[in-house]
Image 1 (cartoon, rainbow, N blue to C red):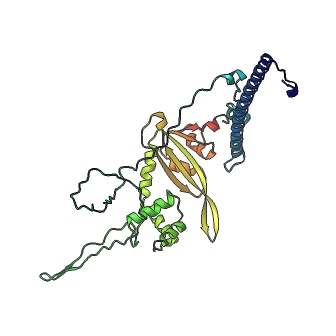
Image 2 (tube, one colour):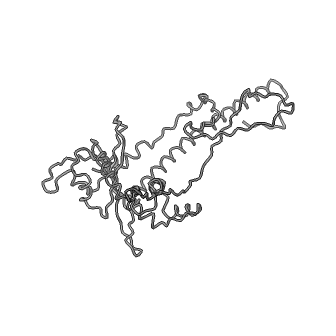
Length: 346
């Protein structure tokens, strides 16, 4: 609607009519703009979903562990892409009021953290009268004590008996690693930092030097290998606990193995997982790892020897000997349970 501002009518009634028409036109344009914004928002969500699925397809098709998928699997991945765009009438409805966001609250410091109390008293009153505490204000500040190296001195005095002319001494202490000047607490800290917190040996060595202690990374590596041998029975018990489950998950992943003289080769970690909490099984979940220098079918066969149950793994042919006898094709004690991404393919 256009008007010549230089030739506006002077009749008040006519001017009011023009104003009402202009207000209605503005309101209609606002409704159209709101509807357009909602359409753009819905289309943006669709584009975001498509980009996510495209990135997933690229990882599956060209990633390190690439796996070909057919058209049926493609339809499965895209079946929920279409996002319906509501009609314009839906946008005209009043939006539901959103609940007001609650102000952020400070999380309390856990009660199990040790407390060190320092009392701050004001200067004595100038009148010299008797003072009484009526209440107190407490402010808690989280503190940190840096890790501290210390030396445990085990002294074994030799005691001589003058009467019977004998010499006695307490037996030597039992160290976790013989002839290694490291306590079990230090060894546990090094191993947890390396394999749980992913701190390489050289980085731990740098951290230790800041505290005036120098443990060479090669030394820590030798200690960890000795600890691995010492803890092998615990690893066997852990694998036995995993294999006691009626269903387990299995997978393998390549790792780079240093062979000396700057040479490398590909080795593999095999992991077997027990965790059915989503199905109501409240048994403690656990994961057992095994290391091999190859990827042959003899490795999972040795790891799962005697197991009878369901194995959920990928389509790697190395697991086939667990399900069926290679010669007679007769089923064995392990039942194959495919992952969802392998179901359409197989």
